[in-house]
Image 1 (cartoon, one colour):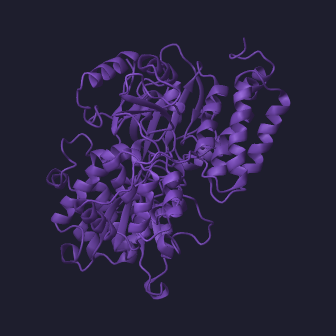
Image 2 (cartoon, each protein chain N blue to C red):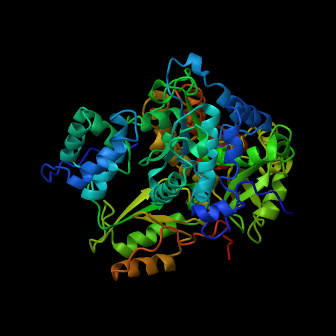
Image 3 (cartoon, each protein chain N blue to C red):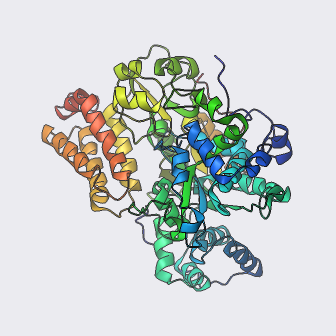
Length: 188
Length: 426
């Protein structure tokens, strides 16, 4: 549960594009009520506009015939709906038990040092935002982090350096699960 | 030793997430038979198989299905089938691989379940961090629709079933079935009081069945092979195979499918490859972070099934999230880590849980840092006892059980710490 208040920064009122309106029609067709469309529509808005500000919440409320307070209640409950902007690469590093048992804290410290993060986790170079998160269901291949949607598993300081260097050099993020055909992870 | 692979049999098959490949492996071949059966026959088969819910509670699946009121008592209400793919219990990661490797097996299982439940609309509720898997599921669903396996009049049976993916957005509590329903309905993901149970009054106040990914993926095999064949695997009360997610201090962490009932030490040695060289076992959490911890003595006595773990260790098989800790582990640190998780994830609805989880975490931080006394341990225990069973959902108990079990079974580690002699002391 997120206790953080939405960021008060305003980017101005929004309207849906024709494509977004069509997508909303398709979403609504999947549910018995309009209210149930709130999470898919929040995702759609976040994909388009990076984070959810109060104007977007008002737009969603109008679209789905809901009180703005309800949209706010839902958006603020779920941690993945961003209430503030993050940098281009959002590094969510797991620090729950299974990752902690195999050195997650060392990896966090290494990333913090390497990126020179401020107290909000934003890197000095303006490319990364680091956030500690709870279990991402990748415990067998711990320690791990999710960068945007992509899982990076069995992290070592060397692997972290390679990933950061590659992203800084403009390399595209690799496939979501690098070890897609592996579910057993022998320790060398 | 070779074990039957009911759930993982296709995982090594390249591109089995595409329907054409899945079909060469027999996926969807059980549908004609299932769609030709009466719904009550399918439910009876699942009941007879003894299949128990694989999400954590271990409740018999067929019995749960049987709770849905018959059509004449539903007052025209729809029945909904929800697949719980919110997989968030720390230490659990089996469903991620099942959905990624073999999405069509899950879809086939859901189609058969929908037939049994006279259900025409279902959702796969998947956690937000798995959006890349949600896309793969969406592709698989599109393939199934194009093949006439979803939608109207499936394979000429007259049965229709629509199935969609619903993506969560980062809330552990949404794996609790009534919270999952709240979330699907477009609310904050907060649990509801039971009764009424979802099977009677769930999503949109209609009868709703919520089943775990792994549970639903077993169903096609049951149709093909029958209940007796399933009961022939595992133990009498814990039939079948189960996926275990192994993490922590073993040589081969990962996902393993084994028959229920194999000895736990054998599982650690053979499947998990044993401990790292030179290490000894200190503790095991056998079923996801919420279940009581086990000592090495208990591990030696237990087998991998619901009854043995409950009777010999007072713990639970849970989701099969098997976390191994060796002698290098600081158990005070480990419990503190877990309570940070519960303090962060409490939905905030019930006072004992909302306030108590944060309070327990704060005390544990002080114990860890050598800044607590014996009375603090008593307060910690008292808090746990007063959270357990005093909240709307099972989350409160899930936070209390690790505290109660760590304090009881590894008391000396905590006493050492409050007396300033522990690993964290200067």
